[in-house]
Structure formats: C-alpha cells, structure tokens
Figure (cartoon, rainbow, N blue to C red):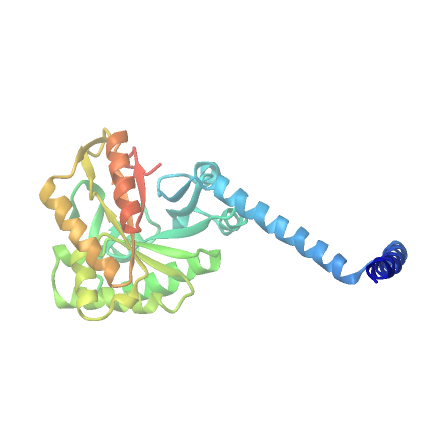
Length: 308
C-alpha cells in the first residue's frame, strides 16, 4: 500500500509540474505578443513620481535660505542676488512685471515693499502728498512720517500703488512704517492704518507688516489680527549703531526679552513671524538661527543697513 501511494504521488507530481510548465510557457508567449496594460500604467506612474522627486530635490538644493530682504538691490542684480533664497522682499516700484515673472519661474515667492506710514522724498508721488508730512524720521533724512488718516493717502496706497503691485504679479506686500502709530498715538492714525489694511485685503496678496509692535498688539487685542498674515520684526538680537558705516551692536537684554515675549504673543495669535537682523557676527547669526528653529520662525541677517 505504501509503495502504491508513493508511486501515485510521483505520477500526480509529474502531472502538476507538466501543467505548471505549460502555464508558464503560455504566459511568456502572451507577454511577448500582448503587453500587460497594468504593467504599462505602473511604469508610467513610476516615471512621473521619479520626476516629481527630482524636482523637489532641486528646490531643496536651490534654496539654501528661506527668507531674504533685498530692498536696496537694483533690478538688474536681483535675480542673481536672491538666487539661494526662497521668499524675498524687494522694492516694489523698482522691479518690473517681467522680472517678477522670471523670479516666479525660478521658484521664488516675491513680496513688494510698500511704505504705508511714511513719505520718502525720492518717490514719484512725494510732491503730491508732502503737505501730509507729520515730522522727520530719525536716522533717515529723506523720509517723513505721514498722516495716514488722510483719505487721499489711503486711496493712493490701496488703489494706485498696491493695485500696480498686484498687476505686476507680486505674491505679497511688505508693509513698512505702521510705527507711525507709536510716534503719533492718535485714534485717527490707528483707524487710518486699519482702513489701509482692510483695503489691501481686497487683493490676492499676503500682507506682512514690518515692526509696528504697538499697532499690531492692538490689532490682536481687538481681534483684528486677521488683517495681516505675518510680522517682520527688526533687531531682536542685533541693531544698528552707525547707519552710514554699517556698524552693528547686540540688542540689550531688556529689549531682547520684550521682543521675544511680543513675538510669542503674535505667533500664538496665528500670525507668522520673521526676523530681520543686522549683524556680521557669525556667533550672533547662529544664535538667531537656533532661536528661530526652536520657535518656528524665519529670519534674514543682513551685513548691510541698505539691505543689498
């Protein structure tokens, strides 16, 4: 009985092997003449994913820094100067639509500088609004604080300047000198700035406000923090000692602690935080880098006051 069973098993094994070999040969013949659609689709999917991975790796390699502020860089130099920075702020009026488009093609996010709280004498609209000057701007002899409660000024900022920047394709606006409310703490000044922000919200551009801690703190207190997307705070760790010679200094402990507490308050309100520092000291830069990494902020450390 056992010998018969072993013989039967051998016969069955041979039959199974014969069937399997036939099936394999038949399958090979099918693949040689009729490509499997599923296999083709899988190959295409792998190719697409490989391309996407390569693009991502290129972006990581290209943008060694996340954030840069280049307000003093001329149009002919901005593409080269900003090459390794992902998000950049530039002089809104100084960069053409064509260059903004080229920066976008290179993968940059581009913010336009827009001065909403002071009037610079070299702007082409200076004569139109010079009567609105409130007083001189310390350390900047070619600039004056401006009465932002004036409806003509508000309209020009929102509809003319910002409208032009929107047409040029900017991603956001770098709004400067809302600190006018600190120097002229009047209700009409505060409300004038709010009106400007409300008007700018009509565009599909992000709004970053530079400095203006007193104004921003009141916005948050009054549940109006949604009028801005981010805050750029200057000189948390370092400051300017000599504006003409690019000599810098470290911020004293009291002011540093104040700004750290303030920025923590801003961040908890859902507003992104950026730091703009002035220093040539690599140890200070490293301290800034570690602080920002720990808190989820971005920073730019400039070795020049002119932001070149």
